[in-house]
Image 1 (tube, rainbow, N blue to C red):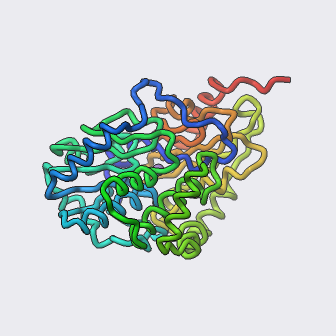
Image 2: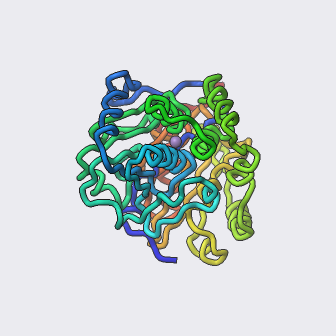
Amino acid sequence: MPGRPDHVASHVDIETPTGAVGVSAPALPSPRGELRRPGEADWQAVLDAIAGASSVDLLAHVLPDGDALGSALAVGLALRQRGVEVRVSFGDDPQVVPASLSFLPGQELIVPVSEVPERPELMISFDVADARRLGLLQAKAEAARQLVVVDHHTSNAGFGTLRLIDPLAPATAVLVDELLRRLGVPLDQQIATCLYAGVASDTGSFRYAATTPATHEFASRLLAAGVRHDAISRRLWDTQSFGYLKVLAAALERAELEPLAAGGRGLVWTWVPWADLLAHGVPPEQIEGLIDVVRKAAEAEVALVLKEDPDGSLRGSSRANGAVDVAAACAALGGGGHAYAAGFTSHRGVPATVAAFRAALDAQSAPIPD
Ligand code: MN
């Protein structure tokens, strides 16, 4: 399996809030104070940009999840109906659609990085919190005449020329639903399937705290459009290769529980050597959900999974249940994300990386009051 280039492997692994179970607080305000929910003028500017474009490039983030790729494909299908030349892409090399997302309609719209124009007329990114998450497409995005950023990450620093960023939206797919409504494109079964994959992914099948009555109303409209939610759920949540089960078993065997970490709230952590992926034929994008197994440990407030890349660097994914801010801990290691779901990239090896993460947790975890 070829390695990914350094500038992708070293991206800041800012993630969607997949670990938001039990977190009751809404999205945090932006530390930069720049984020505001899109207003009428923002929507109109994006509609005008789309109306004036003969060709549109739609981007998901590297290692795309259901929200990123589902959102990009939904808009791709909608704009193709309107006779616009559309391409969907993401900046990985190799560019692999995760097996769990291969059911998404519109895959024929996906093109390799090389087929994206050097200076696109109109580019729209979906679920991309940071320009570095565009991977190999970052330079082309920055050269685009217009770059629209559609996202729901609190940590989005506001790149691009036009922005539809709503940190209160449970998924980017929710913003796409509004965009399609304003474009006058009805939800057919294909588009609805893409959007359902997005909202189901980012809400953990409607379990996470960001799920609202409006989220269920959205899902209701998607089901009414003919979405096969049972088949999608099985593909998204309940289907893995046998090799993945072996990698998971080894990771769980390797897991350590540190009850005294995080101010006595507990840390559970493990790591996945690149050799395990090679031995079992598991592509790296397939272990993104491993953190959701590790974080089940009742004895730990914080969970951490380190995933080794071929160059030996480690991509860290962390989750917290609400009492500790892992975005702050990950920021100390050069990463970022949400308070309850964040990540980083480390070049220091496993013991030193875990030690640094533990120290960062201690620095911002108040001890549990007596
Ligand atoms: Mn998302």
